[in-house]
Length: 321
Image 1 (cartoon, helix red, strand yellow):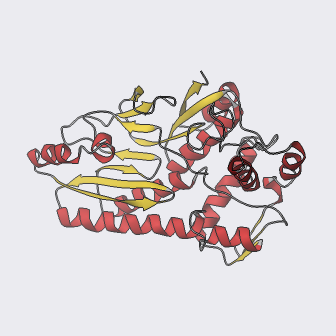
Image 2: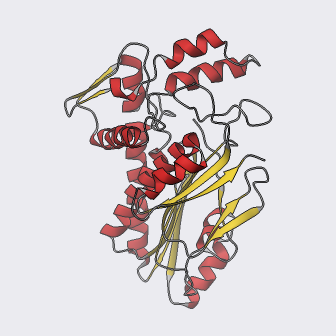
Image 3: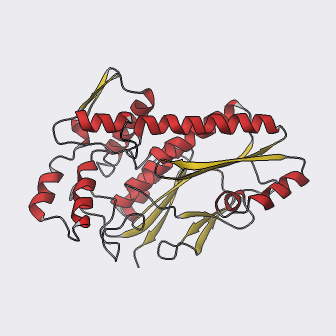
């Protein structure tokens, strides 16, 4: 499930520097404060990843961002469906994975806990639904009802067996962690920055994290784009620190009206009908990413109740037009 970004940096923020080509201006501001800046960007996790940081020690920044990108590659190797050699891809292919990568175990156990907390709205076993809908869309069709019903029967997070020694799937099942892996990658990046005492940084792994402040001394702000007009900022999170993630119907749509898209209600096999997007802010990227996906399935009322049950989390809901 590939998600196009809905979060855009507001002008004058590090987000803008990282996402909208404003890095020279950011560097000028940093230099005026006696700070060095560094940026690393590349393709990972099915999106463009950009890491930007400022500090007194340029060599420390270089080391930290290089290590942070290696941390992202490690997350990819464990849980990316964009890599056929990842541990998750091998699990889906073989139905069993011995001695699973600890990074995969961490994400999968969180996913199963969130599935329980959300009443199954978040379900990492929806991968067969993606396969079904993508194949039908390639033919210019919607899945036939019998095929949809048969596929839904293979979706059930409670049938995944997870142990330190092995992960096991029943025949016909498949896992995706695309609903949280980008947020988890942001967490891993921030952990590396902690190790190097990097105080001011903006992280874009497909979801967002920020710490410290802009070199001009102001808090970070994060613009939220309109799902139907992605270049228009509909709202601004200010100040922004911690993590933010958005799930929406616009990223991979199977129909022109966005009624059918890459987020599935595990109970029906179809896309939820009420919302265009949900943005969640949270103390961790993993929580922000997972909750935004679950809330998208639940709808505004039930989604708000779910998010409110997690300390330090908040949600913004955008209804379909």
